[in-house]
Image (cartoon, one colour):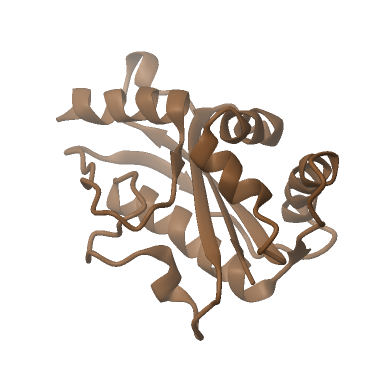
Length: 176
């Protein structure tokens, strides 16, 4: 099962994941996460703002409007990355069979989620991976979205060898 987790990390880092409302398999490894650095609430002066700024540069260059930081979306994004790391899975479908949008206090007209699992905490690398994938790019650049947040959670999967590298789980969530 540890090999499955490593494989999921490698595949996830290579292809990323874009939210679609279709059942997806939950990838739950056996073993322990060595350490987790839970992302903290973002504010306009924090890392989250810099991450959103990176996304907004891409949106503006593509003719889309800027996304505004949203506290509730930030809370949902942080909950998603923390949940996936602590419960050791990487998927849009949560272990209870629901999706991220069930975490909002009120229904959103439009929403989407992009996930990226990678070594290194480069937001530019995560955004480029999303741009290179048609379904991720559609989520990232959708003109129907107006608010967003990004969460990044750092963790150390497995133990020993090449699995003992800091890994980062990015979650970009946007809504209108």
